[in-house]
Image (cartoon, rainbow, N blue to C red):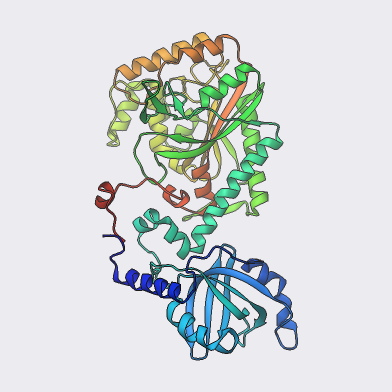
Length: 504
């Protein structure tokens, strides 16, 4: 049964009583003329006036009641809007005895959204407040808020009922305000650099652009299956073939894989492609991008992340094979020998899949012994060709690619490379990926003949990069679970959600 909670029933009865008194508990004619933040800012001088008040200044504000303290003929309430918190003094003699005693004290409570009008004054405790001469209910909350001082401590509840989490926790709202700013600044940065923002399909005929397991859906009108995109890469590179020279997309991607502290089935990233540039140019623009973000977010270059401190002014570059020994401590004599790598991994009680090639095994070494040690921003470069199916081979050493991944605080933040534009080489890479899929690798890249055809018309030398927005925001806000930077993260259904019979 919906609304069976007795406290909700009591609040519903109060809402009905207000209606009978001619008060609309869900009005839609707010006359707010300022925000709490602006009110507090423009009235700071009141504290220095003789009477510490100015009855000639009149403001109308709106917000949710977060605290209600009744003191006989007068009360203090605390209201909150998106910009801040304000104390409001409500006196019987100012708003009317009948309204104060019968409506305000009995039927308005914590959680309700109200509109208050009055003048600024400073209390005896030195707090800038609003002296109300009018109070009006805008929205009656029929569900009571959690107890103020304990709030919502259960993580599951916070994620499932994000609206309640946002009501109770100003810090959570701040995290998502920062996230919004990061996305806005990212767009502005690339536009200022001359990049064109584009939109590419969300449903793909082939699960391409990255090595990942896709979500499958069915297109009824066409009568065929489609894949939710795991990456927009191949479509963006088609645009480079078509003549655009700098494009980007802030995109939502979907990968049908496990969930943990850094992975969610749907996530946000920016991918950008830049003609006549190499991965070395991307290293430089990435440094510029971080400087731009930090300047516009007013962040210090050294940020805490858990027990670590990350110095964003110290970027370094290390080739992957070199990092295995210099950072991971892997013996030099094994890093280029398949059998020795397998024996070494097994000696460390690490399970090794059968059939891995040398490049894949080197990737395993990196994942196990290097990645978590990369605290300050580090560009790991020169990846093996076997684990880089879309990256251009090095002219100096064809066994490696012109690729980097950026790691910060032990986590991958970005992936980039000089793009492979040789259609014959690309075809052979796809064929190798197809063989890997037949051998059980369900994340291997599928053949995309249309993309091969696009490359055959000629793609200018190009560099491309993807940056994970979710993980970046985690770094900037010192959050350690991706769920804390996603407004509505993926959650396992509750029993009553599966039956669509949730009760409140």
